[in-house]
Image (cartoon, rainbow, N blue to C red; front, side, top):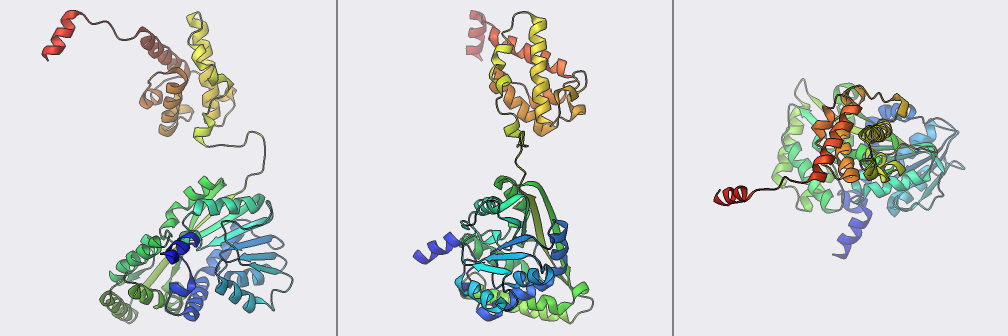
Length: 410
C-alpha cells in the first residue's frame, strides 16, 4: 500500500516498473522520439523556439530530446529535470561530453522545480502531463518559471486516438484500454491529449493553440513503428493482470500478418499544445466570468432601478448595459451601438447565459438567456429589465377566496 501511495504522488511513469526491460524501454523511448522529431522540431520553431534561448525540458527522461535540442540549437543553454534517479543518471552519463557548459540536469519534480520565476524562454513538457495526478498544478509551475512572453509547449498522447492499423487489429483497442486502466490506477491520465487546452487555460496561459502531429508507416517506414512500440509494456500489463495472455498472443499474430499484407499501414498521432505567459499590464484579459465580476457600476446596480423618473432610470440602465457589454466583448463603450440587435454586436449563447446570471445577481430578476439573444437593441433589453423589475416589486396578484377554493378542489 505504501508503494502505491508513493507511486501516485509522483505519477504513473517509473521506468523500473513500466516495462519488462529497462534497457529496451530506453531504446523504445529513443525510437519514439525519432518517430516524431521532424514534425515536433517544426512545431517548436513555429512556437518561437530559436537558437540562443534558455530552454527547459520537464520530465527529460533518458535525455533523447535534450540530445536533439543540443544539436539543433548550439547557442542555447538547456536544462532538464527528471524525477526518476535512474533516468536522470542515464542522461547525465550519455550526454556528458557533448553538453559541457551548455546542459544542466537536475533530479527534481515538475511540481516544485526550485527555479526562480521568469527564468526560461521556452519550457517543453513532452509525454509528461499524462503521467501526473495533478497536471494543472504542474502547468502552473511551468508558467511560473517562464519569462513574460515565454512559451510553454506540452506534447501528450490520447490513447483513445492512439496507434491504429490497416488491416484493422481489434486487439489494439483492448491493449490500450488495459494500458489506460493501469495508468489511471497509478494516478495518470492517458487520454489527456484532448484536455490540453483546458489544462493550459486553468493554469493561466494565454494565446493557447493545439496541433496534432502524425506519423504514418507509408511515409517513414515500418521499422520506425516497430522500434517505437515494442512488446515490453504489453508484457508488463500481462504480468500486472491488466491484459490477458490470449489477447497479447492474438495481437502479436495479427501484427505479424499485417506486416506481410500489401497494402498495410500503421498510423499514430501526438497532441501539441502551446501557451504564452502574458506580459504584465493593466487591464489584462480575464475569463468571461471574471469580466462580469462586480465593478463600481454593478455594485450600485440595484440603485439604478430605484431612480426617480422613468426616462432617467432607462438611461442609467442603458449606460450600465453598454459598459457590461463592452467589458464582455472586449470593446470600448463607444463601440457598443444601442440600436442594434445584441446578436449582431457579438453576444452569443454563452455570453447570454453570463448576462442572465449577472442580471439575477445585480437586480434579483429572472431573464432568460434566449430573451437576451432575441433583444433587438440595448434599449429594448433595458426596457425588458425594467418591466421584470416592476413585476417583481408588485409581487403576485392577490387571490380571491374563490381562487383558493378552486385550487383546493383541483
